[in-house]
Length: 231
Image (cartoon, rainbow, N blue to C red; front, side, top):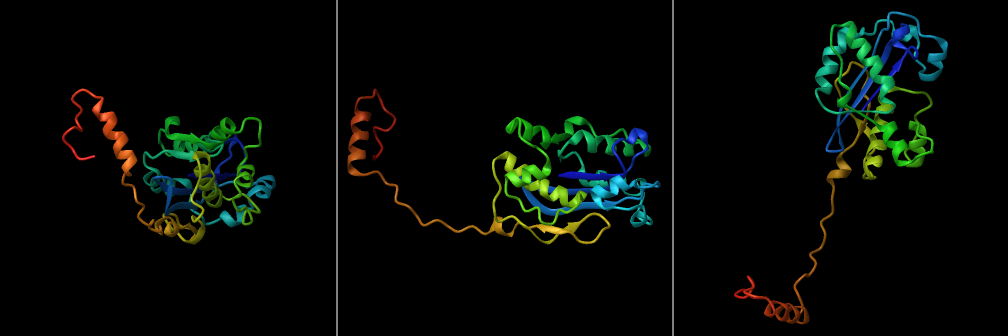
């Protein structure tokens, strides 16, 4: 799961990445591994952008530039599918930044867009990340502003719901193993997924009536393979 925050809307007009957040899923279950970095864009952060994500140019001073983290980022994502909400926006920034360091970019075939998934599943309905969280009763109380890592964590829950449903025991409630340089982030815990209650054995042997009916049916067949076997 991947999300970004930026200085604006268009890398072609000089806008830059200022935050990347990734959450790893394996078999549609969170592993606890994340990649998270704030980035120095080496330019100003317009007030209208700060109003969305709360990140200021002053805060980003001293943070690494993209060229210092891109190798770790590429190692983290590898060739795994990238699940992104409104993928066109994030990928144009990711690939624009990769171009500045001489990398050819991440191919579109590696990307899954949950916005497109949601629009197919709920045509005509709101399909923003907020709207999908409300639809699936996913807690938004910690999302006063946009944030790449938090949004990637929320998207993980939304994505599993779009696929058919998540296990309700999975929660954002512990500490993750971070591959980035920021403070420890909330963990999507796997403990509840591992704790399963064993079912009591259930009798399943055929009754006398069922065995008699089966024998009658077999008797009507030519050379049945069951002829020499007990019931």
